[in-house]
Image 1 (cartoon, rainbow, N blue to C red):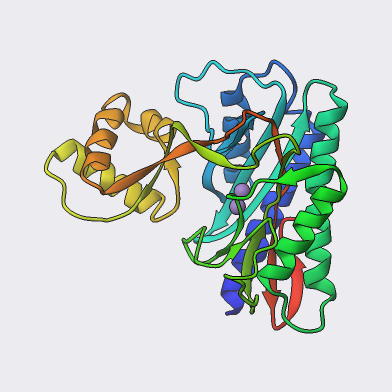
Image 2: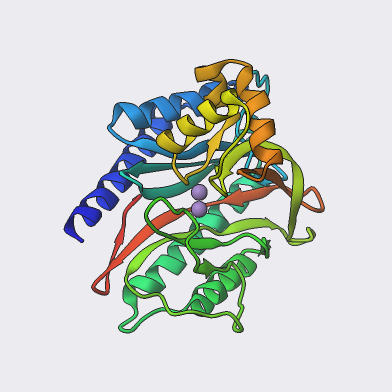
Length: 302
Ligand code: MN
Ligand code: MN
C-alpha cells in the first residue's frame, strides 16, 4: 500500500507542478497552435519524471472533452479552452483540468469561476464530513453550486474513481443530484470534475467526430505484422491507459494509421469520440484528483 501511495502522491505533485508551469509561462494564450500546447505539456510531464496518463485534451467552447490535436493539427487556441491532462507513475494516475478564457469574455470567466467553485465545494464536503461521503451528496452540492451562479451542469459527464492503470474504474461522481445510483466513497482515488454550461443550453453532450484518442479494449491476436508490431508497442507503452494516433505517428509514421484502423475494426482498440454540448453552448471544466486514505483526504493535484 505504501508504494502505491508514494506513486499516487508523486503523480499528483507532477500534475500540480506542470499546471503551475503552464500558468506561469502563459502557455495557453490566444493564437498558439493546440499541438504546441499539448506537446509542451506532455514533454514537461516526462521531464519531471512522470508519463502522460492520457493525451492532453485541448477542447474549445462547445467541445466539452476528448479533443486532442491530430499529428498535423492546425487549430489554434481561442475561446473558452479546457486543458485536461493527467500524469501517471507506474500506472497510478492524477487527473486534473483547468479552463482559460482567451476572449476577455465576462461570461467565460463566470462559467470558469462557477466550475472552480463547484469543485471546491464538493472537495470541502469530502474533507469536512465525519463519515463517508456519498456520490449523491457530491452531485447535489455540485448542481446547486452551479445553479446558484445562474448556470447548469452537464448531466452526462461525471467524475470517476481511479485504479491501477484504470482511469475510470467503476464509481461515477455525478454533477447532478442523482439518488438512485448513489455510492459511498470508501478509501480510494477519485477525480471530481464539474462541467458548467449556460442555463439556456441542453446540458448534455453527444458523440461528435472521432478524437484520435484510443484505448486497448480486448487484447487478442491480429493478422498483419504491422498491426501486431504496433499493438505490442501500445500494450508495452500505455497498457490499458488511453493513447492517441499523434503519438503513434511520431514513432511509426503513417503506417500507424493503417494499423489503428485494423485494430479498431477488429475490436482490439476503441476510439473515443469528441464530446460536444448538444445545443452548441460553451462549456467550462475544473478537475482535481483526491486520495482518501484511512478516511483522510488529500488533494493530490493541488
Ligand atoms: Mn481529466
Ligand atoms: Mn477525469
